[in-house]
Image (cartoon, one colour):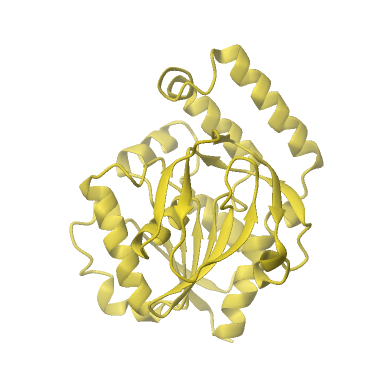
Amino acid sequence: MKNLNLLVVEGNLKKENENFKNSGIQTHAESLKESLSYYTKELNIDVFNPCSEKSFDKILPNIKKYHGLIWGGSSLNIYNDCIEIRRQISFMKECFKSIKKILAICWGMQVAVTAAGGEVKKSTNGAHIGIANGIEINENGINHPLYKSKKKKFNSPAFNFDEVVTLPQGALHLASNKINKIQSINFQSGISDIWGLQYHPEITYSKMISLIKFRKDRLINDRKCFKDEQEIQKHISFIEEEIKISEKNSRMLELKNWLEFLKSAA
C-alpha cells in the first residue's frame, strides 16, 4: 500500500505556538506527528493552521488528496467570537465536504461539534488540568472500533475548561467521566465520519506537566484553578504518580485504532 496522506490541523494561534517553542514545549501538531510516527512511518503529513491563513485557497484545491484529518488542541474557547475561531469553524465545514475520516481531539472535537450544529460551553463541573480521571466507556463505546482493546475505565492526559453540551444530530455518545459527560463521540457530517475525543491520548503526561508550569500564572490568577504555586506542585506530584503506572501503548490506543480504521478504508 502507498503511504497515506494525512492533514494535521493546528488549532493554536501563532503567538501561542511561539511561546511554546520559547519554553521548550512541542506544539500540538508536533506532538501529533511524533505520536503518529510511533505507529507508522507510512504517512505523508501536512500541517495547516486556519488561524494564520486569510483564505484557504492554498489547500482547498488539493484537499481531496487526504485520506484523513486529525484536528488537535488549542487554548482558545469556541464561544469567544473572533476571526481566528470563525476561520477554524469555516475550515472544518470545508473538510466535511472533502475528507472522509476525521479524528477530532479536544479543541478539534469542539470545533467539529460546533460546525455540525452542536454546542460547547464552559464546563460546569470544573476543568481537567493535565489529567482526566475515571473516563468510562459506555455500551456504545464498548462496541465501537475507537475503543478496541481499551480498558472500560481509564485515565488520560487532558487539558480543558469547556465541554460539549449539545451533540450534533445523530451523534453516538461513547464515553464520560465526572467532569465531562461527553468524553468521546462519533458522528457524520457531509461525507465525513468524525471520531471525537475530549482528552489527549497523543500527548504525554510529561508535556502536560510542562503546560501546567507554562500556564501557572493563568491557572492561578485568571482561571482560579489553584490558589498558589504550592497547590500546583501538589497536583503535578499527583500526575507524576500516574506516569509511574501509565503504559504508552494503552494511553495511545485510540490513535492506533483510528489509524487502523483509516488504513482499512483507504
